[in-house]
Image (cartoon, rainbow, N blue to C red; front, top):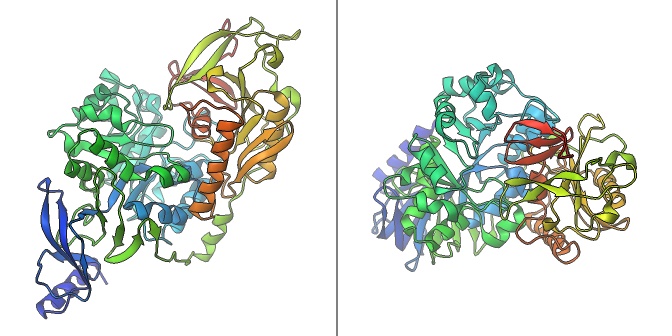
Length: 587
């Protein structure tokens, strides 16, 4: 049965004056085309909106009591893995907040398990009511020298590019490769362009002629803008700007001054990386909308940025609006400033009420793919205490400083004291935090060691996590070598996740057995465990409240966001695009 035959059946029912399935009365209906709310009724039949006739007979009638009736929101760019939930569990989390569709880039699991990881995400998503569209990861690994668990070329991606659930090519982080005309990069861009599909960007601080070239290569979006000037720069080049509100990166408020009535259609909302506990507290795309409204954006414009703008940008038909022929996926909201739906309908059926998910998750895995739900952490090569030594013979070190509520970092030159062998000495450098990134996919034993600015504040132990963007090697930070080593070992024993230790004892932990980055437990279970970890981070480790204790840590290993990051191969200067020595008098 084709999609059109379903519409034909609906038309036949209406011709025969059959009762509609559902009618919502007395609602303030969002007109995302005309940019206003209007008072009226909405009629639904067989999962589709059929009109606004208040006199249409319906099998069920709901009085909206003057609530706002909004189309379900679309997230223009998200890494589901960052929620720490499998796709089907992620759906249970976000649908009650009014999200009906997400554009997901599965490059996290792809960096762990390649195409098998992507197929797992697609299969898991099919078990849920959430409409998950995918962008095929463009940078696995993020950069050619990265130590990831897989490498994907254009030929690998071509297997899935024509799939109806694939919207295009995911964020092109390899900006130098685009600018240099790297053949492998151009092959991926051409793959998406020839299929007539979207190409997402990732270009923090790119400007001028370099940005022109980046756009010329076919890149159509960017979610890495942090200033209004960057946003305007991209929009005047025809790009879509994705205003991001994640767990570590809070950009919506900063970018709103760039939004006006003339460029509104180029503005979309996304979350990018947002943990499940954060979503439960603040909402999903609903949080972006509430923030925008609180800063003076008209409610209907905020709704447009969260719905029809994204649907049009990514070519998603019959979603993002309330009009005849559109999917009957909508929500009722009493207060646009809070934007917390009290009823969520998916294809005409009540899916969530008062924040509670009501529908049942399907379990119909392809038998050949079900085993992928058991992707486990790869073992790392055994570490020795000497692997954590950090030579700084000059006594001047390049130190990573985390910027408040940002994924950006700064490189600062700081004086440090060393032992008789010229190695960084914890006892003589109170407040400094040592950072370790350990390759865990191929047992190479590669270990990068660096220093975090004391401002980060980690005291009384160490934290290790197998979630580290994008290669997802093991990352640990701590104020002594013994606990750092112990935390790394325990994270591996646990099969992946987050481990917090003090004086050789585990004081808090969250297992993430799916690739070391996701759980198949309920959102509430994972969120409660995360809350305990955050309490420990604040009260025991005294981590800076201007940084997300775990999301920030996981991004310190991603060498595509300025200024300076740490990989298993060492300290990387994103500005010069080269490795650099921890000792400031070298390089």
